[in-house]
Length: 185
Image (cartoon, rainbow, N blue to C red; front, side):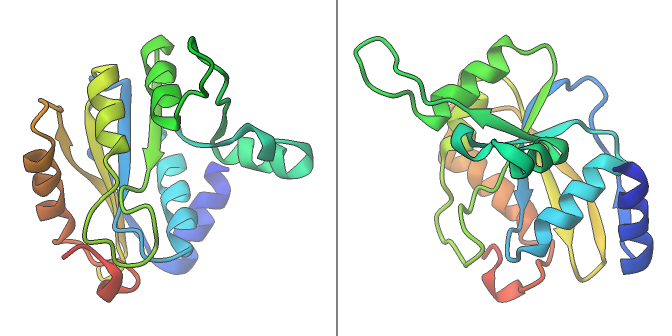
């Protein structure tokens, strides 16, 4: 995959800014801004090139057959929304928090906008996952104007979610997505 990623970056003219913090083995990685289906290709290639073992979550029902194999190779991990005490299904947030707590090394990538369209309010699950698992939020970005993929600030959740998400958005406003009008404002 690393070889294919080099080809993708070479052909498309993209470069890397690899600032991954050396002491971080577990994190929630937010990929911003998310404005295009192309984001997955460039982000996935960038993380292969940076040797960051990024995973993304997907429903376990999708992880079957050839498609399941391909998703797994790309970093997909199945979420099992099993029943928890009380009979209800666990949420994705609970499942990802548990995954991070029990893993020695795990970086889970999410898109906080939850859509490729402009989203004035981010989904907050990523923050709750990081806070609950006591891991940092690392900002991964794609700047289509500079053709640069990289790692931005590292935020350690302190419970002041609105303030810290705004801090992340301030950085996000400095990078341009494929469709800037859909990006962070």
